[in-house]
Length: 278
Image (tube, rainbow, N blue to C red; front, side, top):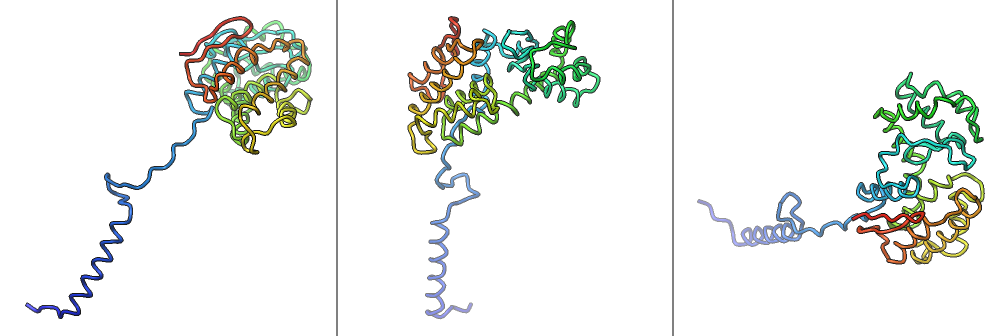
């Protein structure tokens, strides 16, 4: 056996010590006993499935006097607001274009469906409250289509594309939590996001003249109060929406409670009716 010289042995011990120190200081990425610092928990938004379900129930309480939002796929009536027929889970309207887009999507996915024949009429009545070409069987056919899971999915997808996703994205960009994102969603559902003074974007601009959102260095509660003030102003510009209880006895209740995350239990009223999510 050949023994290493003292110098060689010393050098080898030094190298081994350095390797050991490096291994000791590095996180054991493949070990179940790794002690690396865990990543910070991702903040929950309104697009979290549980929060989204709450949002759907809150809107349904105001739009349909029921928490059972999935029962509203078949809903359709003319509520006399100048928008023609209002229908489905989010109030698609024959006079505002979103019903036309929905039926077109459904037809793209399922040609020959029971509503496809109404596409020419929906194009003609867009922008008005007319039922021309829709009566007398459109409401009956809508309820028939609502039994089709393909139509239900089309309603879900258009709701998300036109209303839910833009509201959540804008809310997150403004630094708002779940409640703030919901106030945006409820506003865009009712007012749309066009160029008129009562549209969502202009409600937001009106609020920004009074307060800054968290993303601009403002306080969240102060900004949400300013936004809800602007929302109430917009609602009062239109007789059909002049009852502001969905703001006064719903959203402001949660804001006063400091429940910025919309954590259950939730108790509120809309149009005098009481609701609860446990």
